[in-house]
Amino acid sequence: MGEQDDSGLTRIQRRNRELILEGALTVFSNSGFRGATIDQIAGEAGLSKPNVLYYFASKDEIHKTLLTTLLDMWLAPLSNIDPEGEPLQEVLDYVAAKLRMSRQYPRESRLFAYEILRGAPHLTEILGGRLRGTVEDAVAILQDWMQSGRLRNVEPHHLIFSIWAMTQHYADFEVQVRAVLGKGHDPFSEAQEFLDDLYRRLLSP
Image (cartoon, rainbow, N blue to C red):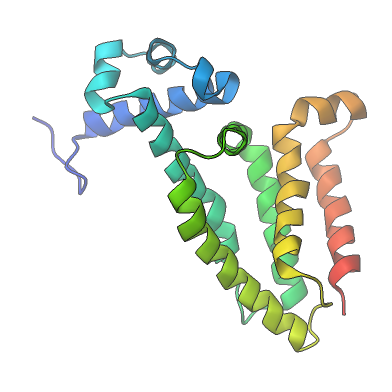
C-alpha cells in the first residue's frame, strides 16, 4: 500500500481523484449537470465507471466537490483585498485578478454559472454563509475607504456585483465576445485596459 498524505489518501488515490475531478469539470462545463453522466466523466478521466464510483458515490457528490473547490478559488482574490493598501489600486488589482481567472479558468466559471442558473441546489448553504461573509468583509473595507474620502462613494455591494459581471462575462460568453470582435483581437487584454479605465473613472475621489 502506498504512502498516505494528510487526507489519508495514497499518491495513486489522490491522482485518481484529481483525474476524476478534472474530467468532470470538462463534462459539466460542456453539458451541464443534467446532461452529464458518470460514463462521460469516466471516459474523460480515463478510468472505468466502477473506479469513479469507488471515489465518489454519485454524480451529485462529484459536482458538489467541484463547486466547493471552485468557490474557494473564486473568493480568494476578494479575501486578499488589503485594508492597509492604496484603495483604488486594491480595487483595480481585484478587477485584474477576476479577469485573469476568467481567462485561465473559463470551464470553472461556466460550471459556476450553470449552478447559479439551476438555483444553486448544491451551494445554497455556502452562498448564504461563506460567500456572504466574504463579501461583507470586503464591503466593510470599501465603506471605510469611501467614508474617509479615499474612494468615490458608490454602493459597495453593487460595485462588487458589477466587477463579477464585467469580468466573468468574458469566460461565460467567450464565444459570443470573440464572434463579435472578430479575428485579430485579444478580448482579455482589451477588457483589462477598458475595465481599468472604467473603474478609475468611477472610483477616483
